[in-house]
Every structure is written in C-alpha cells, then in structure tokens.
Image: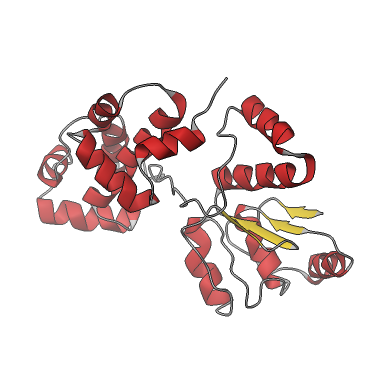
Length: 248
C-alpha cells in the first residue's frame, strides 16, 4: 500500500520520480491511497482517469479543471475502487483509514482504533460529506472575519442577515456582498452549515434530546432541525446518532 497523506496547498504538478513510484506500485498490485489533497498526485499519475474520486472540498474545482476526465463526487467521504482510494478532507481521511483497517483487520480492531481516536467507529464512504466551514483566516480587524468568529459562538441567537450586518456596521447589501467575497457563500447558508455542524457534534457526543439540540443550535424547533438535517445528509438526526454515536 502506498499512501499519499496530503499535498501542498498550491497543488504543484507531480514530479516524474513520484509519478513513476505510484504507477510502478499500482502495477505491482499495491493499493494507492490519496487522502485529502493527496488525491491530486494520484490523479496526476493517471490512476483515476475515468473513475470517480473525491478530494478536499476546497480543491474540487482545481482538480476538475486539471483532470476533466475524472467524475468528482463532492457528497461522499471517500471513494474506494479496491486498487485506488481517495478521500475528502481531514476528518474524511480518518474515516477512509478506518475503512482500510476494517477491511484488513476486522471491525473489532477498527472500532478499537476509533475509540482511541474518540471518533465515530464507522462512517460509510457513501455517507454525505459534511464539509465543516471554519472561519476563514482574515486580516486583523477585518469586520467579516470578526463577525464570523462571534457568530460561531452564538449560534443559538437569532442571526438574521440584518442583525449580522448591523453588528458588522455595514448596510445589508454591502454586508452580503463582502461576506460572499470572503466565504464564497451567503450569510444564511453559512450560518445553516455552522448550525448543522454543531448539531452533528452534539448528536455524536451527547445524549441531549432533539429539542435541546435544536435550541442550542438555533434552529427554533426540532422539526426545523430535522428538515434541514435530512435535506443535507439524506438521513434523520435519530438515524445519524444511532449510526455515529461516539461511545467511550
């Protein structure tokens, strides 16, 4: 097995020597694993031509432009073809590694490793990729960055666009435009994903009821939380907790 754990963020082209190592290893029967940005050199080596793949969400467009013959699936955690495996971001790379352990050493060993890492014991590759959206690194004093830091800590507040714009000391129109420039999405979409992130963590790590989780995440009601959760992950919060609850 040859594992490419990542790749520089500027996505340099694969050099000839490493390319040959990957190709020769694959020809000899080694499983080639590209974790997170590590999918880029695997693609550059020609091992994903015409085959579905995934990488870190931030590099999906770059990979698509670089290799338009590779069908990319942004909604999965990892893609395993048997001889070549690629994963999405860092958390998904852990899932992919646990999958490899499970296949080779069994579920008991994989579950023990997961417990030691304090992560969910098994998330299938087809599970919807939850793309965490951290607050972007911005210059000191940037009102959008500072606002996002604040909002991430106050998800249970009523975070309307008007409220956020006022807090950033901007007009609503200017705020939405600047927010999109920084994040690539709208304030409402970003807040929703932050709330879903918080809900997912609480489902995995606590015994809180759905009403309590919905309140802590700012959904207003468990019905609203369930609707948004199902729309994003194609599963209910209850089913998600049953499958991914982290136990000691």
